Every structure is written in structure tokens, then in C-alpha cells.
Image 1 (cartoon, rainbow over the protein chains, first blue to last red):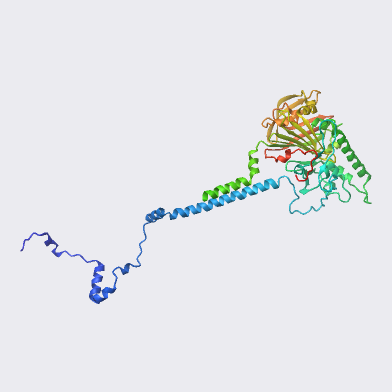
Image 2: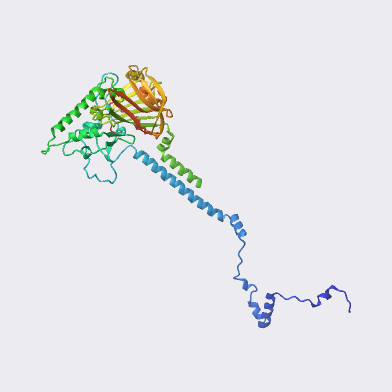
Length: 271
Length: 218
């Protein structure tokens, strides 16, 4: 029997340790008997064991099932909705400010009256009728097609001085300025100043009352100690009223003179 | 559903602001204001001239219509122009202040007769320049047939044909006049541009008052 050449002979002394679970199981069998073993579940110890899947696997799963994409889409949707809402609000504000505020000049918001005095409404428009129409009508001039005219509210100037709206009778600034009654003369006509007075007409134009003109106004409203207008004041008022008549006679008689023409105007003013 | 929301929101935005949208497209509108100054070499009080001193003349143009408006202490008056009747156009003079306001309409031919003093006027252009409101302006001298002279400075970069129709003194000037003056009896009346704007103009500005109409309900 010696000298055999079978391959298993060499494995005679080879040993392999059994797995730990097998050993533990054998030990339990031997210690507690087969009855105890029936109560044990083999993989009980692994009950609480957790193994996290690899990251790439998680992403793939979410991608396939659409979970992550859904979240991203939701965020984008909210952002887009907010942007659209903002556009609508901005458009509404722009539209309202464009249509409501452009043609009207109102008194300075929240501002109190200046210390120097209050702005007094000028005498009521002589052309207002009981039904509050603003119709101003008289025809003048021979010639072509002169016809009575009515004013459209939309194009009527809205005068303001130093941020305060003033009402000007018949839209005639000079006639209004020389028609005040004492003591209601506005202070912007009587105060001493070196600067011209600015009158805002509308969003496009403003005119200036020159220093010389303001001096004339001051002179026109000088009063004596007894409260009556001084002689110089009465003379100045007559002077201004005569200018008004001359201007109307020159430009409103249908004789072809045009106050918007620089030559016609200069030759009238400088004669 | 999301696409529907976007479409609705954009529609509301566009529908809610029609005028600014239209206005933004109306960039051909032009508004120019000139301040009127009356001076004398002697200085001092200009008499009745003080009622126009500091006044303002404003030119509005847009959508085939134009208006020039004078606002001064003494009076407010406008001339409206609308294109029509071929190239003649229609001109309406409106006195807007005082107890006796009026409206006078003129055809193109009548307008030419109204401004006949400018017929045959000659514009001499020079190379002198001056800057007005950031525009380089060239000098021109307009000599009328009767020898009267108007000096003007114009901006070649601004073209507005309706201006020279409303101001026939400047028919031969190749640009918008930003300053002009006339000297008479040693006194000068000057018109100097103070503002130029391309902002859209409300169409109410070009609305000529209707003869005999009640202003209520407008």
C-alpha cells in the first residue's frame, strides 16, 4: 500500500477552518441541544444590518423613476411663474403712470403751504355757466372761417407755481394777475426777488415771468396805510390793462397779424 | 398647463399696457420748446415786451400732425397743422386764452397767403457753428424780399419737414432751427431751444377744439 500515487494523498494533512457561522451553530447545537436550535433563525443577526447602495446607483434609480427631474421642474415652474407675475405688475404700473399722471400737474403731495403765504384761487372763470361748461365763445375777424370755439378739457393747460396748482380764469395769466383784490394777492407776486417766477404749464413747457414784470406787479399792489391802492399802483394797473387792449387789437381783429410769427410779434412789441 | 399659464400671463402683460407699447413704437414724435427773450442794447424795462419776455413756444410733431403753441403772460395761442388735401394740409389757428377765444381754419393756399411775406426769402448758409442742447448748429441768415433779416442756428442732424411748414420763415433751412432772432429798432427778440424730446406725445395735444361743441362729456 505504500508508494501509491493517488492525488488525494497529498491533501492528507490539509486543513481548512470552517466558517464562523458554522462553528457558532455547531456550538449552539452541542450546548443547547437540538431543541434550542429550532427557535433560532439563521440570519437573525443580520436583521438590523444596512448597506447603502453606491451613489451612482441611487442617481440612476432616481433618473429612471423621474423623482429628481420632477423636483427640478417644480422649482423652474415657480421661478417662471414669479417672473411672469412680476412682468404683469410692472406693465400695469407703467400703464397707469403713463395714462393717469402725465397731463395733470397737481399740488405738491403732502407739502404744506409755504410760510410766506397761501395761493389764492383767482376770480371765477367768467365764462363758466351754471352747468359748469367751459365754453368760450366768440368769433372774431372777418376772413375765412373763424368760428366759435370750445375748449377740450384734455388739452387745457394746468398751471402751477412752486408745485401748487393755480386756477387761471379764462387761461389768461396777465388778466388774472392784475385782477386780485387786496389782501388776497399771492405772495409770489409781491415778494422781493432777483429771480424770475417760473410757471409750469404742463409736462412740456414752463414760462418765466421776468424780473421787470414782477417789479411791475409789486408796484401795482402797493397800498397806502389806509389800505387803499397807491396812485402809482392804480396807474400801473391801467398801464397793464391798456397793453392787453393793444395786444387784442393787434392780433385778434382778423387783420392777419400772427403773434407766433417772430416778425409780427417783434414789430408790435418794439414800435 | 404650464405653457398655458405662460401664454396667459404674457397676454395680460401685453394687453394691459397698450399705450406704452404703441407709444414705444411712435419714436418719430418730436417736441421742441424755445424760450422767448426780449432784450435791448440799452437794457431796462421792455414795456409791453415784458408780457412776452420769458414766454415759451413749443412745437409738437407726430403721426402726420403738428402744432406750435405760444404760451406767455399775454396770451396762449396755437396753430395746428394736419396733413390732408394732398400736400396742402389744413391749418387751424386757435386762441386759447382770454374771454374771446376763437378758432380760424385755413387751407394750404390760404396759409401761403397768410405768410406771404416769406415768399421768395433767401437762406444763406454759413459754416459758423454753435452748440445748442448738445447739438452742433450751423448759422443761417434768412433775408426776406423786403430786406428784413432773421438769423437762425439749425441742427442738420434733426430733420422735421413739418416744422418749416408751420414756420415758413425757415423753409430753406436744411435742419431743425434751435435758435433764431430778429432785430428791430435796436431791440432783439430771440427764441432759444431749451428742450428737445422724442418721447411719445399724447394724441390729445393735436386735438383741435371743435367749433360750437360743449366740453362736457369729453
